Length: 294
Image (cartoon, rainbow, N blue to C red; front, side):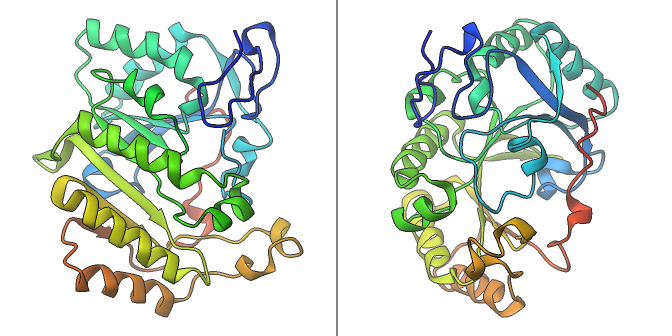
């Protein structure tokens, strides 16, 4: 079957071993499955989010801080049965949810696992934590299987999306996908400190791109209002590999840049938002991708 699950529509026959634009064939590769404490407060809460980090990526941002797994494909092959067992193990460890990180390109393999979880009345919310570059029709297939959507909205300008992710149509697809996510998840529900349903849209501010960030925040507020939470992120971490190719973003975000976007959000009436404080732009916040828990 030719793979057209994401907007790349690369057509690779992954079931026969061909590698798609995401860097993956038909097998599932995971690089880490563990409690994670650095998500938004109602996601991590006290015990941590049960994160499952999938290898590969259909977007491939030049500034990716997880490039060890998104590009280099480090990780361990697992079966659908093993993936479900990982869900159960994370639950026993006290996870507040199951957080599927960069899962889009494994949608075909993940859906049967999620259906089994629903049939077994698995008690934890399922989170779809993605880069936002998805087809709305693919998201529709997740209806009734995913409780919380945690997508990025990285770009609104096609030129920026093209330069940093080779995806000039990023906003076209991401905006439609987020529409579908909000339609499915409805108004956010947070019960006793943990999120049970809803959508949190993340936006990572890039250095020198605060005006685009403000346009994104305004778009989200105008379109969804209080139907979603917005997470305004300052943890951009420049990597050495972009110094020559993308020098304009080869520096950390400044405090004044971040605050200008936060103040803008406040000025237009954004109330359901998460902001970051302190030195979050540090590689110490990137977990070790050492196949732990896999």
